[in-house]
Amino acid sequence: MSPAARLCLAVGGVAWLLASPVAGQIGELHLGVVASYGTPETYGPGAGLVVGVAPGRLVYVGLRWSYQAGATKLQVRNRVQTFAVDLGVQIPAGALEVVPSMSLGALRFAQRAAGASMHSTEFFAAPGLAVEIPVARVALIPEIQVYLAGSPAVLRPVTHRGVLASMRLVVPIEISRFRW
Image 1 (cartoon, rainbow, N blue to C red):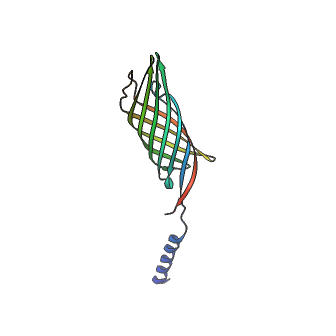
Image 2 (cartoon, rainbow, N blue to C red):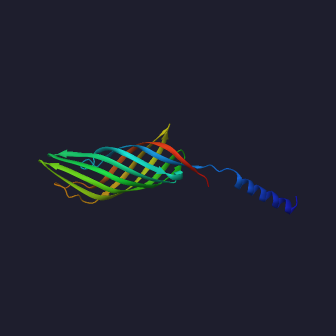
Image 3 (cartoon, rainbow, N blue to C red):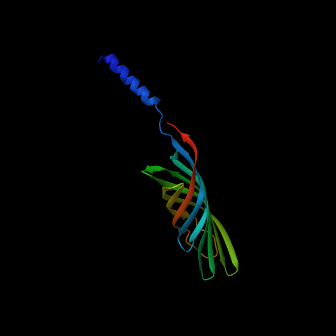
C-alpha cells in the first residue's frame, strides 16, 4: 500500500471517529427529602427538603432546608434549622458516584428554658462526602458532614460544631443531554 493510501485511510478513520455519536452526559434535577442525625445535644434527629441540579453529572449545586430536634435536658430544649447551598463534584465510581462537597449557609439555633426563649443565626460551612446510589427510579445518597458553625448567643451554651450523618432520597429527573 502506498504512503498516500495509508494517509487517506488514517485521515478517513480519524474523520469517522470524530463524526460518530459520542455518549451524552445527562443533566439531572434532584427533588427529594433528607433525614439526618447529628451531635445529640444540639442537632439530634432531623428531616428536611432538598432540590438540586447536576449539569452533565459533573458538578452538583443544591439547596437544603432541614429542622433538627436537639436534646431536651434540664428543661432546656434545643432546635436548629439549616438553610444551605450544597456544592459538589461528582466522580463516577462504577454504578455509583462519589461526591466530595461543601455546604455553606446559615444555622438558626433556638433554645427554650424556664419560660424564656432565645434565637441566634450563625454562618456555617460543612465539608462532606456523599455517595449517590441509583435504586430503580430514585437515588439514595448517604452523606457525612462536619458542621463548623459560629458560637450561637443562646441562654445556655451548646455544642455548635459536630458531625452530621444524613440520607437523601431524591428523584433524579433528566433535564438535558450534553455532548462532547
